[in-house]
Amino acid sequence: MVDEKYVKELEETISRFMAPLKNIPFPIVIKAISGFSVIPFNQNDQSDKALLEKLVKAMKNATKTANQTGIFTNRPNEVGNHIEPFVRQALNDLGLSASTPFTTSGKHKAAGYPDIEIKEPDGRLM
Image (cartoon, rainbow, N blue to C red):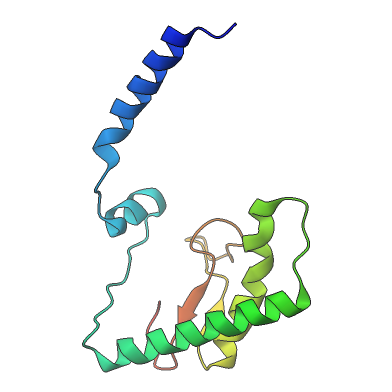
């Protein structure tokens, strides 16, 4: 039997617990949970605009190729792992360097975030 009063108290407690987490800027959340910083995007900078165009095109190409090839997995949460090769290839095809990032110990990091390290031809890191 479900104790309705207990469930209501739990819901209220969890709600109060989560309330302070609202309206925290995305870059702060990412830095706190991953240790990595979000690189600001300047809408007035021509190189940022060109990069955005490449990223959008790469994602369109990656999703088209993934859709044509198919992604088959028993667990929906694994789709992200299966689409990464398509994303890396699409980015590389457009002249960006997309690879698995390195850990602080110098090994490639195959799981977790960030999953893909992107460099522009001039060496700028994404």
